[in-house]
Amino acid sequence: MANHKSNLKRIRQDKKKALHNKYYAKTMRNAVRKLRAVTDKDEAVKLYPSVQKMLDKLTKTNIIHKNKAANLKSSLSRHIAALG
Image (tube, rainbow, N blue to C red; front, side, top):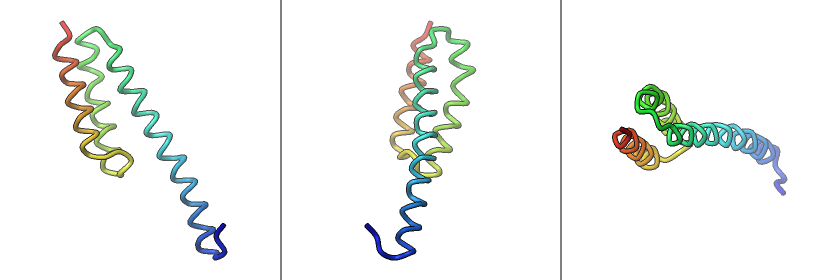
């Protein structure tokens, strides 16, 4: 365990940030899961921009890696294109 006040504070901050990041990462995963479950193309096209915006925001704040966001956006757009 840390002995310095600054280390104790850093530990508290890290716990708080980890909880915050976990919430947004889970929210993103649920949104992606919801979009993949959609079978109607019109509904998927309406939902896609919000998911894309969420991925871009999480990438900007380094909650997810930029390549992961790019892979997810690519796979989701392919999923939407495959819908009939």
